[in-house]
Length: 347
Image 1: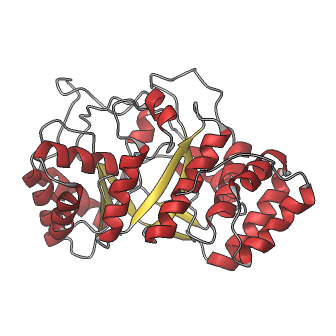
Image 2: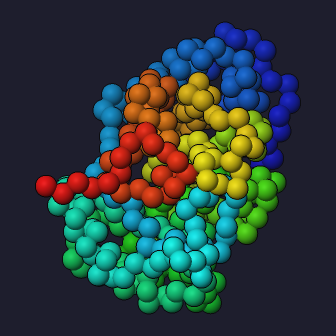
């Protein structure tokens, strides 16, 4: 991977706007270009550039999936400072869902038309390999048509650590048991300075990369994410996007990129940072399209963190995917998100 340097940013507003045409012709932005565009281009201009790229690359069809996010445990050793969901092992609120409970949740979601289930949990200190294999195998046997989108890179690392297995062996066994694809969680910002501040007990960005590259080598597709709007600098945010692009150039395994904003309520970092507004969110979605367009065609709007209206506007700033209906979601709700109701309402 080449070193990213931020020197001599482009000076011309018109030159920055015109870069969209160069991107469509196959030319890539440099980090200097991206930083200058973010800092200097008018919001509407960057939106038009990103929208043109989206239209040419992904068309005018907005995609989404009917899904449910199931957190099989809230016990987590990482104790990230930006997380309001985790509980300690001995907490009265700690839980691990049984297979029966998982089957019930999936059956309920399928009854509402769900075609994908996201399975994620905390970094549990002692769950055996068999727990994960049984979970996947049972759900795949009962619901063969449902996409099991499960286990972020930090979870893979924890499963491997507890069971003393290599990443490749861990991923291969889970894939054999029924794992179809992986979410891109645990990325936050792919920079160890930032990670050392907000999630010091979680994996390094290079370890995140290793897990993703290994998954892609086993034909396990994944998404990639970015949680921004906390203590990262703009350069670090841009660097994150280029690191995603570099991985994709080597593996081609990312199916979508999903940027969303840090939600502070009930976290250790509450009150530390100015909340990220809609303008900065839209600008970040747009620069994501400009940087990643030739590599990852699908950019997802975060209606969960931004609300439906801003997410709809994001569809004019480079996004082409609306994510999932999320018939259940617990992690951002724990951080005070009230833009929608996540509870299933049975007839």
